[in-house]
Amino acid sequence: MNILQMHNIFNNIYNKAEELNKRFSLHYKTTFQSYNNHFININGKYYNQKYYMPVITVENIGDICFNIDSIEFEFYVTKEQIIHIDLEHLISEYKKELNIYEYKDCTNDIYIIGDNKYDILNKVSNSLDNKFGISINCSSLSDSEIIHHFNIVSSLLNKNF
Image (tube, rainbow, N blue to C red; front, side, top):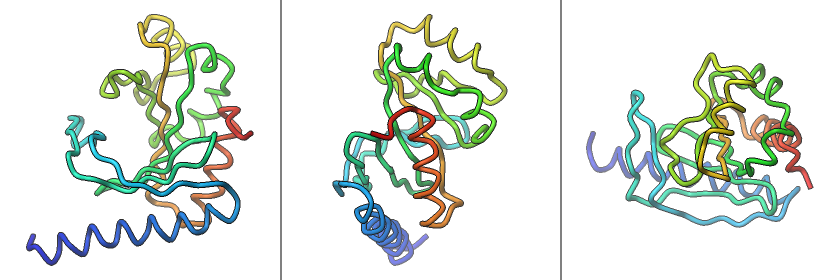
């Protein structure tokens, strides 16, 4: 890959993020920023992103995070909140796109494809962490579909205030 290709990839990511932020800001209060030190999973191994990538924060609900290879919704819940989430619906709707992980060690996955609600709740109860991240990969969706599925997921997580 040459420098111009890399430049165009990053610009396309930021352009997509800016456009999506405009659409989200019609319905929600949003903040558009860039952050580093996120993790990217490549072939089952996590790598730290020292470079900055865009994030749309939807106030009091969650984030839409952009990576080189994906766009993901990201929500945080406590150990007490996770037992009230409709995990069965979340798993059935987003089985392959779903990731649930510990907040303090985001590389420690709580959900593995094939797990059911009880597997997740067991891992949560055995975790020393009190906060958990829930992310959904939405890379294959159009902007309108991203907004629609963000609303669905936030309501499943009881985060739609």
